[in-house]
Every structure is written in C-alpha cells, then in structure tokens.
Image 1: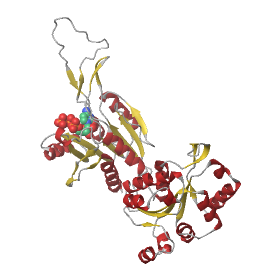
Image 2 (image 1 turned 180 degrees about the vertical axis):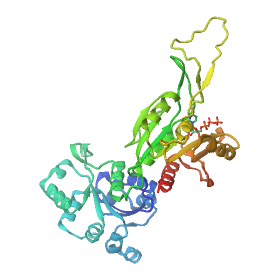
Image 3 (image 1 turned 90 degrees about the vertical axis):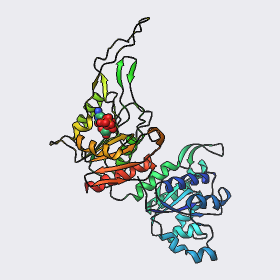
Image 4 (image 1 turned 135 degrees about the horizontal axis):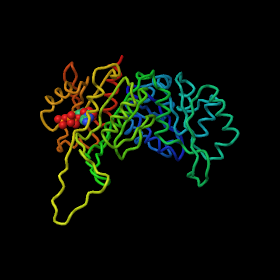
Length: 400
Ligand code: CTP
C-alpha cells in the first residue's frame, strides 16, 4: 500500500531499539509518507538528530522551549499537523507519562495536546514490560483508544529473554498503514494476475524456459491486494516469496496456466504479466532422451501454446471488465504494442523494452508505455514496485 500524501509525527524515545526508528523512517519515506521526528533526551542517547533529519529530510524537534523551533512551528500545531502520531520505540517512561497526562518535555506535551490517533510501539526490559505499573498504564492507554503494536518476544540486549523487544519496522509500517488506510478502492473486486515464465517439458529432465523473474507480476498482485482486491496469482516457477494476502496458484506449463486462469474466473480485472512460452514440444516424451554415440542431435518439433491473454480477453459473458496484457519488445515497441492490443483483444497493453541493454528483464526497474484505445502514455523509469503501485491506482480509477 502507498502512504503517499500522509504525514506521520514520529516520537523517538530512549532505548537501545531507537536505531530501528531509522529503518522505520526509511520505509515510511519509501511509501510516500512525510515524516517529522521528535527526539527525546533519552532517545538522543541512542540516535542523533542528524541521522533522523537525513532520513526524514525534515527538521527534527527536540526541545519544548526552543526559540528557533517555536518560531518555526509551535508544539500545539506540530501535534496536529500530522495524520498519525507514532511513538517508536515507546519507553516505559513515556507510556507512564501518557497514562498520567504529564507534559514536562516536548514529546509528552505533544502527546497531551494532539487530537490525532496515537500508535505506540513499546520497547523495554522484560521485567519493566511485565511490571504491574506498565500493565496498568497500557490498560489506561488502550481504554483511551491508543493503538499498540508489540512488543515482540525474544532475546534482549540486556541478555534476558521475554516480551519487550520493539516490533520490527515492517510490522510497525503495516500497523501505520492499517490506521491510515482510507476506504480501499478495489474492495470487493477480484483480480487475476499471471506472473513468471512457463516451463515446457522436452522430456522428464529438460524443459524450454525463459528469463522472466516474475518480479513485475508479483509486484502487481501485491499492489492490487494493497488496494483491497481479492487477488489470484497464477505463477510459473519463480524464486520469489508469495505476496502477502494473495492466493497463489503454482503451475509449470502454459496449458496449466490457462486451466488455472479459467478456474479462477469470474474476475473484474485480469493482468497477464507472465512470459508464457509460445511453443511447447509437439510430442514431449516421458522417457529421457538419450544420446546415441555418433548420432545426430534430435530435432525438436514444436507446436504453439494456447494464448492465455487472447483466450480470456475474447468477448463473452465471462470476460473480465478490464484486461491488461504485456508486450515485451526489443524494437518498434509502439507499433508492436498497439498491434498486440488489437490482435489479442486486451483493453490495455503495458509495453516494455526488453532489449538486454535496458537491464529490464530480470532487473528491479521497468520503463513502461501504457497503450490503450485512448493512446499511448510514456511512464518514467521506475522501480518495479512503483510501476505496480501506479498501475494498481490506474486500474482502480478505470473501474470507478
Ligand atoms: N501471453 C499469453 N499467452 C501466451 C503468450 C503470451 O497470455 N501463450 C500474454 C503475455 O502474458 C503478455 C502478452 O500475451 O501479456 C504478450 O506476450 P508476448 O510474448 O510479448 O507477445 P507474443 O504474443 O508472444 O508476440 P511476439 O512473439 O510477436 O512478441
């Protein structure tokens, strides 16, 4: 999910886990969120204002009574200009101050003055966490609607074991996303996505394949799920983890991919990002092909595979509302992409240049051209995750 346009006020308090706040800031910035940091005196023992400032690209606030800070932005305004206030790590001390309503430094004053939701990510020694005072403070905060993530259980910096470790930054990011999520534009929609290569057997040990990594298709499945769609990802063999919240159907051949796609219908959206082998063996053998000394190499007789995109895009009652195909081209990209769109019956074609010089095939970036009946849009070169996020938003807009 993207947090583009959202603003988080991040309060970093004292604790060995304060270094993880740096990774959290990086993740928030990557998802498009603006981050303003407040560093307590305790927090400054573990991380410097300069590190927070460099990562957040924003002034870092430390003092309650600072002439320079106050002239720039008063603490009341600071506590209200964000969409969410996050305390990570949240020490036992700040949790006690919040529960008691104390306001004796900038962080506690902001927390008392804010009218926004607050998320705390506690981190402390296991005995401090399980102390009845902390338990009572957490109960008070929960009753006031303060959201909590963690702490995790595990080995601690103080050589003890138990609950008290700060949650990992990706988990804190997910909690922030859940709190900031607006209505999800693809909720109630079903999206079918194909991804990766197909493997077409020659015999039981050999197969025809291609260099597709599946990165773009998997990223699109994740981005559509992030916008609330129920996603079925039909994937050829890839070395990628399953995207969270997505139903993954693993197949090897084009015939299996087509069958899995048909079984997944009906769908509102279908995105065909797989690099399907165009041909398979006309007569695949279930016995390993053997060399005969001095014999001629075998002639591999091929037969065309079904075109999955064209089959699913064919007009009819089961056709998905929006069908998106890909065109991997090495030359005359625009011409071939438009031709492919018409020939295969897709609504959109995402054309990309897979000339080896671009490094796109198997790489982490992509530069695409969105070809539709309305014309051709040229997108800048972006990380494949960003292409996916942008495409998912375009798809959601198109279905409005
Ligand atoms: N595709 C498909 N089934 C196939 C072949 C391709 O669903 N058997 C889909 C791909 O997933 C992609 C689009 O069709 O969305 C374009 O695939 P591409 O391989 O670029 O085009 P081809 O039809 O193979 O045309 P050409 O070989 O001329 O590039």
